[in-house]
Length: 433
Ligand SMILES: Nc1nc2c(c(=O)[nH]1)N[C@@H](CN(C=O)c1ccc(C(=O)N[C@@H](CCC(=O)O)C(=O)O)cc1)CN2
Image 1 (cartoon, rainbow, N blue to C red):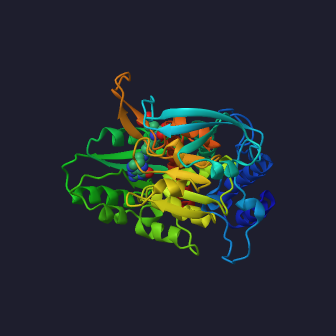
Image 2: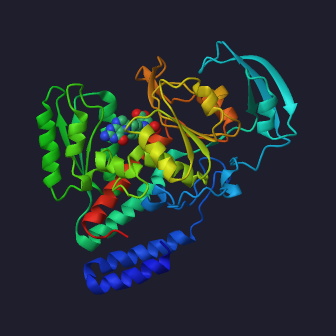
Image 3: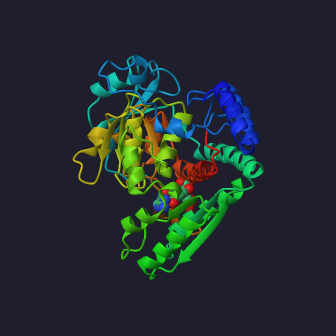
């Protein structure tokens, strides 16, 4: 909302409710401040450089509400994106053969190396190239720095939490239900608790043994539903096999469902005429990373790999709300490479290490890697390390922008959870914009 419009609303609300007055005025100041900030694009600067970003508000994340008329889309929106310039004519490309191999990371063999001076567009080149060849540019992709984006978002949330505290005397509260002792789940819950501490959100944890009953989990959820100091509730997934996940997630109060997994929130995300109260955090993180990198979604061909409730499904629904053309790839898809090779943007949430090879990508594609897969690594202190779904060392040579693992989608996912918890508390205290 424009700063001036917020100012008018703030003045009107102040007459009705002086308690909101100070809060809304500080929001006006922030809106005006944000309006002056320049939204960066991946085209600007090198990865990792600190710069001011405009945070995408919840309504921006849900996408613009345009009707489905079948007029041709604006030309700009449909053009393919290359953050480091419009097209790569005259750019030197290395054409590398791909075959079986002893490559270090992604089992890549380079059979032949041919250098071309490219005088046409990358697409033309790929059409001319034999299928078994992949074009690698000598200009590596921009690395989208999720850690730094998450840090900016947390600073913004911390400021809003302080304002809430002085306006209504309360801070947002997040309750987590953790069942069992999976090491990965325990780490993710630790990140969530630490994130809460950093921004001033109160966190509560119900830790239950893996052999507890479904009703004990339900009791924790129902207790948090009734607790007025709790504005967000999540049940860490996966739950042990013997539990009915859908029953438990449906028991979370719709107004506190900060993971957005309640069937009504998922349904409202799927229906374009409706607004869900919450959007799942990883899906929101993918869109946030793309928008903050200045990447246009309307009219783009985006392929989502995976269709889980946690990432793939909500991401594909959210992308449609942004007017992207969405392909969904899953374990039964025949020839997934053929689909990804046609895509402007590839978002992978398959949970399979190094599934997406360089040869799966179109030159200049944007790659968002949601996978965090543990793979054996005797050189690491833990005996394993995390790797994404995408073979980074190959993809970085083909893509124009890519998220790393770790340090890409993960930290922004946690930041989105904090943002959802703040939004929930604002809604409950009548402080929403
Ligand atoms: N109730 C939920 N359960 C699960 C969700 C979820 O959103 N809600 N998502 C995943 C796990 N997850 C959050 O819960 C999650 C996964 C990974 C990260 C993250 O920050 N990863 C880091 C690397 C982690 C490391 O080094 O250990 C990164 O990518 O940089 C955050 C959250 C399944 N369950």
